[in-house]
Amino acid sequence: MDQLLPDGIGRTHYVLELPDSVSGVAYQDVAAIAIAMVALSDGEAVELHERAHLLHAAIPEAVHRLIATLPAPDESAYAATNAGEHFAERASSAWSLLRPIVGYCPIGGPAEMLQVAEERVPGTALFLLWYLDQEAFSAHPDRAILRGPAETFAAPSLAPWRPIRAVLRSQHLAGGHFTPWPTPGVRATLALGYQRDRQSTSPLLRWAAPLQLPAVVVAGWLGQ
Image (cartoon, rainbow, N blue to C red; front, side, top):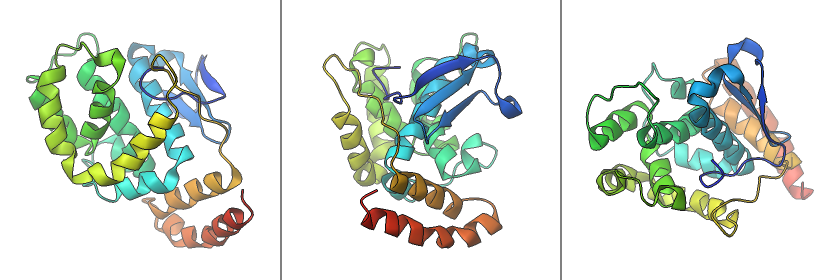
């Protein structure tokens, strides 16, 4: 995990259970993650999903510019919940192509599985390419098979993805690990809430989202 996406400064904690029977939660305001013990059979995918939420919290505007270029997820997928979940599900969807769940029977080869994943969670290929570029997967047996199709799927959204990759690279340490994400500032927290509500499936939250914008602007003026 530590060679794929940064953790938060509050680190990842394994807990007996979480509210509402969820598998994991990213507490973006304190840059920490909690993962329920019941999720350990697929714990890596859950953790990458939550680490993507921390990335989203660090650069909310860049993430939403990227999401705006992608087709909507399959309506039955968890990624369809909102833009934030779409972004985070891409990270775990890409992982599942490289480390399938034990006992899972694939419906085709790696390229076919990528196509299915991309149709269900558009943008999966962008995270897949990021993983394939890391040392952790330099010798993966499907690396050469997946790279070509992934580049084709990723091409329409490469421009807004580049600044996100640049931010990730800026966190890189020697040896392939990362500096953990700090606690988000006031402006980043407000901007995240604004973007989340603006993209919400709730009409009331979408209507109320612009009311938060003045606070985002003022926090920016104050250097927060």
